[in-house]
Each structure stands twice: as C-alpha cells, then as structure tokens.
Amino acid sequence: MKLSVISIFILFITNAFAQSEPKWDNSKKEEWPNECQKVSIPSSLDGEKQSAIFYPSTKDNSPLIVSLHTWSGNYTQKDTLVIASIKKNYNYIHPDFRGPNKTYKATGSKYVIQDIEDAIAYAIKNGKVDINNIHVIGTSGGGHAALLAYMNTNYPVKTFSAWVPIPDLKKWYYESEGRGTKYALDIAMSTVNDSKFDSKNYYLNEEEAIKRSPFYMRTPVEKRKKSKLYIYAGIHDGYTGSVPISQSLNFYNKIVSEFNSLDTDALIPQKDIMEMVTSRNFVSDSKDTIADRPIHYKKTYKDLVRITIFEGTHECLTDVALNQVISSNILAIGDSNGAKQNGWVNQLKKTNFQDFIYNTSISGNTIGFDNLNQTKLNTLRNIDNYMDEANKKLGGLDKIVIMLGTNDCKAVFEKRKREIPHNMNKLLKKIKAHPAYIKNKPQIYVISPPPCGEDHIMKEKYYGSSKRVHWLFPKFQKVAESNDCKYIDIYTKLSPQWPTLAKDGIHPEEEGQILMSKLIDEQMKLP
Image (tube, rainbow, N blue to C red; front, side, top):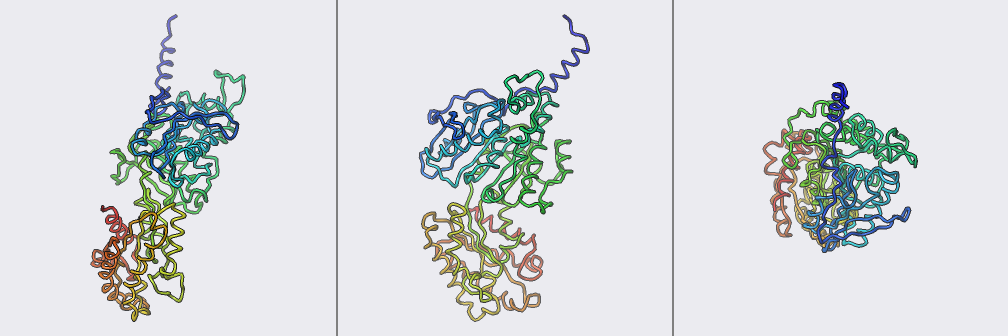
C-alpha cells in the first residue's frame, strides 16, 4: 500500500523529533577489567539481591567512588570511571539499584534509595575506605540517582556530582512526550503499578512521580553542611539531548532557597534561565573553561553547591568527573578580616570550591593576648580546640593557614610587642604537638599581617599599629622558617595600595579581600 504525501510528511516530522538512545544512556554491556569483582548485595529492605561491580583499593584509607548507571543501563553498563578509579587506586562500586528505569521498583523508588545505601555499606565493609572520602557520581538517570542520594543518604558523603540530571520526573514525563522520546513510557511504567498496564495507552501517575523526584524532597540542610553538590549540564541538552537544562537550573535554585530562603541574590535569575534555555547561549565576559569546553554559566552558593553550564549536550566530561576527589582539608585561623562575610577566607572558599575549609577566624583575635580581657580572643589558649574541631569536622587536616598579628599590634599591647613573635613560635610548636598534626602532618602557612593605615585615619586603639606591623612582619618570616612552615608575605605587595583598599586602615573592602586571598592562594599552590 502506498503512503499518501501527508502520511510521509507526518512520518518525517515524527522521526525528526523522536530521539534515539543517546550516548550517555547506552545500555551496552562492558567487558570489565580483571581487577574488578562481580558481587551480590542483598537489599536490607526486601532481601532481593542486587549485583554490582566492585574494585577494592589495595591502599588503606582510600576514597570510595560510587558510580551510578544511567537511565536505561544497569550494573554491567560501560563506565569510563572504572579505569581511572583503578589507576588511582580508589575503591569503586557500580551498583545495579533495580536496573533500567522502567519498572515500579526502579526509577527513584524507596528500593533504589536503599540499594544505593546498601552498596555504600558493602564497599565500606569490604574495601579499604576512608569513611570521610566518599564520592557519588552519576550521569543522566545516574544523575537522578545521585540527587536522590544527596537528599536521602545517611553516610557522610563528601561530594555528589550530578551530570545532566533529572530532578523532576513529573516535568520530564511531559518534556519527553513533547520530544517524542521513549522516556515518557518508561516513567509511566515506573509509576503505574498495574499488571494490566497498556503501553499503547499509557499515562502518568503524577503522585508517584513526585515521590520519586529529588525536586520535591526536602533538602537535609544540616546533614549536607559538610558536603558539596556539583551539578553539570551541557547547554544544548534538551535540543540535542533528552533533558532540558532547566531541570538542573531550577533544582539549583530549590537547594539554595532551602539552605537560606532569604538569600535571593544567591538564586539564578529567571531571565538568565530563560536566556540559556531559549538561545542555547549566555552572554558574559567569563572565559572560564572545563575540559577545554567554554563555560557559559557558573553559579556557586557558599562552599556547598555549584552549577556549571558548559558547551556540550547530554554528557559527562569524564576527565573532570573525578577532579573533586583531589581536595584539601584546610584549617583557617584569623581575625576580623578572616571572619568577614566577604573576607579572605570566604574568598578562598569561592576560588577553591573543591577544598573543605574550616574557618575559626574571630573578630579581635590575637596570637597570644587576652584582647579585651577575653580568653576566646587568645589563639594560644584555644588552638587545641580549633585543631580538635577542624579534625573532627573535616576528617583530617592537609593545611593550616594562619593570618594573625594585627590585633596584637594594638596600642594597648605596645609595651608587649616583643612577645608577639615569641607567641607565634609557641603557637606553631603547640600545633605541631597536637595529635591531629602528628597523624596528618598538614602543611602550615604563616601569613604576614596586612599593612595598617596611618594614625590620622585610624581609631585610637590602633595608633602606632602601622609601625609595629612593619617591625613585626620580617620577624614572622624567621619564626615560620625556623619551624619548617611556609611564609606568605602579603604585607610588601599590599603596602603601596593599602590606603585605597582599606579606608579605615584595617579592614579592606571586598576588592582588597579578593586580592589578599589571591596572593595567599598563589603561594599555597606552589610546590
């Protein structure tokens, strides 16, 4: 029978809009490296055994990579992260969590959430895992699962990386219907628990789709204050891929608003979302790249959540996927310039999002004086607590950064100025005697105090501070070097422009804080 012209036209239009299985949802089985094991993990929810591919590191206290399969795949699906994990000798697990997302027990169900928990538990029990160094990574349907873990896991996961994720199944059902993809039927089959399900006349159970969508789950804010969430999406996804980037952009706003509902400036403006979705571009002066791809848009909320929209489609940039594993645990000790909202410590957090920085800076803090008759402003009295807290919160220390001395140079301590370098020496020796230092041997950085303004612009309590700081900063260098610590001199570089950076002579505005953090960061990155 011949097709009419209209029938041919309809067939052409249908095929043009229907999308084939994308690269990042390829369900082809992988030939796994010999170092890997196939394991079976009974579900602690219903007892049903779930298979997984597992590589146990041969090195004690190694990171754990929890790699989650895509929408149509299962635990046998090809995963490019396994080779890199083995090469780096990271523990690795690739769990099944009920296989392809087209059954009632799959697709974000309570069984899926528990299966991921059980997989992490198995890896911890059978691998040489650093419990404070767990990383969950997923792409597409795996991104959906990574966000489910973010919302539900009880393990102290360090980072969650969701590439081109699907936070909202209800919305994606209608988006998939409009694009003519198979995923609408998959979601329908997953949400309708009916043995007589008709795949030709399918429908969505919206209530069930909402239950399985991270977008509608409440963010466990307190649990995630020690974690980082990375969201990545290619700007052409939704056109040349199956998931519109609005899914990622709206989810970022949801998370940020639940961390702080009052911080509206931290949200992505709707006009920016509209521009990216409609033009597949974003006009900005940024020249940032990721794996040699231009970054169209990047937004960060504190040191907790970051979204990156890059030049690409529905994909994971595998060269980047494990980057977040390499990070530093940093203890920052400072005074008001470190404690300020826009201070140098928070500027470091912005530029080094991958690092975990525990900030003990407090306004009025000194090295070894009871400033204002308050023992809490004497670092020598409090350093053991600082070390204990940071070590507990971060799970170990890699670096300690100290910027103190400005308050020690106040007029009230003028007669005791010669004690200041001796106090710094005592402080460094006390740090090195602490169990956390003995165990981890973190690199210690002593930063010179910044300049102080001349007396005519200063409050009376700081009169003479400019001369005292000038006298002090070279002495700190000798103390640092005698204790095998690295010395960072910001005083010399900041002095010529200090009057324009700090109008009150002590506290630079944001531009000055950024400059201070940049000088510190550059030196900390040197070998």
